[in-house]
Image (cartoon, rainbow, N blue to C red; front, side, top):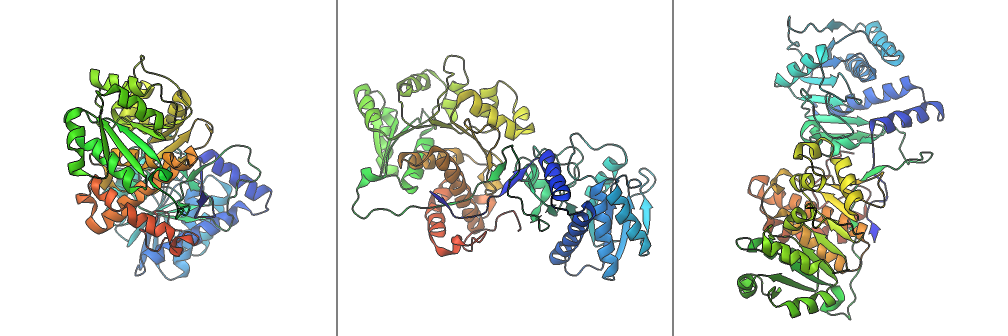
Length: 519
């Protein structure tokens, strides 16, 4: 399969960003002060672009290089005749930040020391610029910086964060308390992992990336890098083909009261392009399936001989949607345990897999836990998963094998073969936080695996298509009214978009909602 975007959207940790900056400064001969000037100027341009009618700015500067970026923004505002107020937490501590601070003062700029408990931030300024902390935050901001962040959040004015919102862990996406709640974030040099998963989207607001004319290509770095998922070009179908040319998927699940889960997974697999889909469930569910979706085949799991034959012919098995965790669910999991083809494991099957009796490791399956299920797989709490979604997904993939798709805000895809890197999807919306969304993803995954595509490609493309369809649906229906069946119904629209020429442009999805990355 061929990615539709030719550019790799690398995601870096704070340590990797610093190493990249060192390479740029020492090996490419671009001074740190030049990078700081570029950052501040680009940020000011973006502020004017987003808030064109502003007549004044309030810039909050810390004592590090992030504060230096803020002083450049303030300088730009002065040069354009815009009233600017600068409030700082303390004297600049780095050489480049001191230089920008002095230049600002040399142009007649005025700074005010922030005195928490004595005063709040000034009322002047149409927009607040957050240049307090930047990257490298590993705990809750304290002292003067912490109180300043709280004051900014309590203000009603829009906030533009420079690089990352102050208080956001740019490696994990955890927003410490307090953390700047930005309307816009202008990120510099390299994209940061934490801006794209966990709390990142909620606290970054509209995310804009500025490479500062030093695009990152990964050359010269020994370690692996994470990346954003990009869509793939759909391979053409052969005219002289039949239903078995496009996969045979069997979906196991649907215990009492959970018929909808297997129905959603089955419908999604069909809409994703699978030629033949069979739902293996209880006798009651198998008997009424055709009423709800006549394209789906069904089988009563009590017919053990037929189940055995079904597994022999299946290209892919999906197990878990609506499975539950009782005796019946355990019997179902045992039925598929000897299946040696590609498998998708979701929902109830994941909860069973977390138990000592069923724990195993396979290279050819894809596990799709939400944070609660992931916690079961790693014997920890859900908050532990959310505190480091990247490492959690890697650990699951390493412990159980295959691929782990950790669902949630900024879905993480980790492959046991590439432990040092991962993929993150920048699509999706809060409307997906509703019952059945995971079942739809499982069905799409099952369809793609049945095509014989590489497992890693299947995982990435399924997550992107699933989230992309949800974004299209939310665009038409709003996030508040989104349900899982809407995602299935919008799959054809996603396919039509990625099959058209509009998507073959660099970063240009014309028929599609814009990516969160504003570049």
